[in-house]
Each structure stands twice: as structure tokens, then as C-alpha cells.
Image (cartoon, rainbow over all chains, first blue to last red):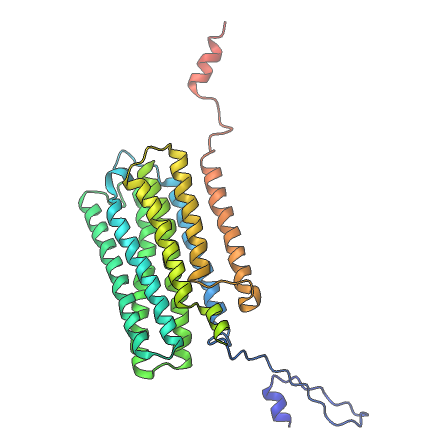
Length: 223
Length: 118
């Protein structure tokens, strides 16, 4: 009996010497919500709070760009540099990758491992396409002499967009690791939880990109 | 059970609705800039920012599945807290950094103007 009490968090009521009642154990079991996969360890909430802290990093970088974004130092301005059509294509890549990740999650809920792997691969493909376009853009800008050293505007531009790109890179690496995990162990409880965490991460990066294209690119070109 | 699942992690329908709304909300501001519509700058920036804000809400609802009840409300609470911090950081930075010269010494021009008063 006492070992059970210790296992369940030591919530046993101690017996008093004069008490002739038998030992009373109050065992409180945390409610297991079987309907929600992956929520029972608190990992999802913890990961969500990580994302919120990440959101603050991006918020501060947006604030830096708002302050420095018009200091061209006699260098090129956004209207000289940015090709909006190409940004539209990379925005589309990220938006497509968001919906295909959604389909991957639905496939996982239907215990469809093949479908999950297929949709995750498509998502990774769109993610890599986005990264390729971004690297090409950076290479192109660098070639024009628009380096981070050229002006405060370009410094904050490279830091903000580069930080987002690093996040997408990390997401792609995570996706590759997850695919091998699913391949080795199948749709285990842990893998489902990981897939839901990466789902949050991936959609969150798309959300940050909305801010980037609205604020850095579209508004930058207009002003 | 299935209704709850759809609520928590989305269904084909909700993902497609979110995707469709996002496409529209992305194409309008891009079309505005690429098409070079005749429009005053404050209006254009206002439309781009407004649609961007709506699209962020669409993503939060249809893709991130934030609800008032998820995680006993802590998910929503932390989101509101973060949004508040972001507002303070962004609005505060812009407000302070664009008013740095507010109470500084008058410029040379102003001194000359005062000196030449009849």
C-alpha cells in the first residue's frame, strides 16, 4: 500500500498515533485526456511558449528594421533592390508548404503512414525551394554590392530575413530527422507529438513571413 | 471524438478555408504593389498592414489552431501576453526613435530667425 502512495506523488495522509481509523490514502490522478494526443506531458504547451519567445525575437528585429529601415547611407533603397515578383513566388512556396504540412497532420490522424511521409516530403520540398530562392536573392544582392556593410537598412534587412531563413533551415533539418524517425519507429506516440510540435513551428514561420513580406518588402518598395 | 479532433488539429475543410483566405489576403497587397495602382501612400500602407494583420489572425485560427480552451487557456493567455509585449516593443521603439530631437537645442536657423526679428 505505501509504495503505491509514494508512486502517486506521496499524497498519503499520515496516520496519527491516537487515530484508530485505518490509513487513508488520497490518490489524485491527473486527468488523462485520451482524446488529445501529445498533450499529456505538457510538451505542446512548453513548445508553444518557446514559439512565443521566438516571436519576441522577431518582434525586436522588426522594431530594429522599423527604426533603421530608411537609413540608406547613400546606398541602394528597397525600390532599387527588391524584385516583388520573386518574393511573391517564395511567399507562395511557404504558403504551399503550410497547407501540405496540414495534410500531413491529417494523414497522421488517419494513421496513414505513407500519406504522412509523402506530404512531409512535399512540405520539405517547398521549404527547400523557399530557401533556394532566398539564397539566390542574397547572392544577387551581394553581387550588386548591397551587402550588410553598405547601410543600416541592409544590416537590419539581412539580420531579420536571415534569422527567418535560419529558422526555416532548422525546420528542414528537423523535418529530415523526423522522417527518419518515422521510418525507423513508425507512428509512435512520441513521433506523433514531434510531428505536432514541428507543425506549430512550421505554421509559425509562415506567420512570421507575413510580417516580413508586408513590412520589409511591400512597404519598403512603396516608401 | 472526431468532432473534437477536428476542433483541435483541423480537418481538410478548415485547412483549405485557411489556405484560400491566405491566398486572397496575400494576392491583394502584392497586386497593389506590382500593379502600381494610383493610391496615396498612407492608404496603400494601411491596406497592406491591415490585410497582413487579418492574415496573421487567419493563420492563428486555421493553421495554429489556437482556441480559448486549449491547454486550459494558457495557450491563448501566452499569445495575448506576447502580443502585448510586441505592441509595447514596436510602438515604443518607433515612438522614441523618431522623436529623439523633440526637446533639443534650437537649430541654427531658428536662432538666426529670432536674432533678426525687428
